[in-house]
Length: 542
Image (cartoon, rainbow, N blue to C red; front, side):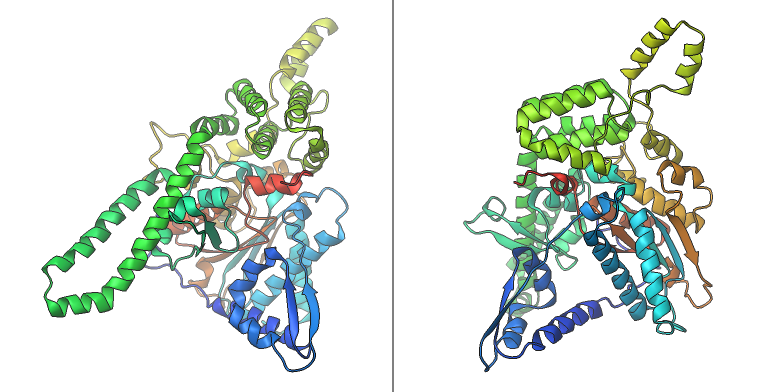
């Protein structure tokens, strides 16, 4: 499902100049140091560096005639930790990342004109926005009079919606990321995919025609598409049989190379699918998804807790066990003390006491918390308690404490209709809404917020949702006159994720864009998934 753009879809601005600008800036910085240079690069920087300046360009810049010098470039990736620590005093690293986002927005507005409509939610989003606006004021006039090329910008903190990031991905691109780890748009496919002794680095973008058609597709539809693609490809090869010399010559010169390239890519993606299937079958993926859906819907919580306990006991994966515990905690607004202590003890016994500090990190980030005493006592329970003796009231409270509290997530889910109600099975071949990215069970909260705000062009009518998200002080709108903005630019939306976004969210918003006539552009501090989120919090490194 490539989600072909509607005939009236707006054209994207020319973003290739960003690549050229980054390359020129790198060359300029290197040329400031005279002479021959040895460049030491951290491994994590190789992929992004390769996207802006290839080896041949660096060789030209680094080789010189004067005496040899050495220097090193080092970069430490904070990933999502800077955003997760918003509840503490902001650290130096956090400030640096927020400044980087603000500088990026300033550059974009300089190149592509002002953004007429700006929305945001989250502490870090508001800080980045205010810093960006300060930069705009300091250099007033750079964008004045410019015609906007992008009509809307939406800034969103990752911790506004941890639930989506904790869910297993089931769209193809998300599964490739979960299984093989996509780095800066590239993936290393091993021998199990390539069917040879060597690994192969593959760039995943729209130029890969096979990938582009399946990247947003629910995984259950991918094999069928690839099978049909293989048959079509074979039919094109078979056309050679009835050709004369001239036709064969044209076929070889004009079509054969393209067919061979498509055949190579098709083989790779079939191999990737087979590898994903083997891994998911081994993990009993269907049972895992069933448990996740139960947690999202708030059903069978006791059975889901038992599943997590079994998962820990079997030592399936320390990261996966943590993820499920966090999903249970967030959807239930914290674990009741008895369950928290039990799961924590079982986890430390199963995976080792060295994980103790990880629990502290997760608690501080709000990912895995324990309900305070009395938190489970609702207004209804309080009224009942007044009608009975203290002893009986205690028993009632204990009984209610064994049930999970109705959490903010539940209330938000109901307000925004995050759990679709459909008669019969959800048709994944013809999706009806953004919930398809989670098999029809759940609409990503982050994407629903963006959809609702864009519809209203403000946070009006969403006050209760903002309050439940604990973001009353951090939701903002900044709208300017749209007289200079074309109708085409007003359908272009730049979404900025602070703390990382998932491929599931990207696919969901692409679907929304096709349905509503929007076109989304994504800017993020990182592409994340549940494993990366847990690894960022873990004190035990693999």
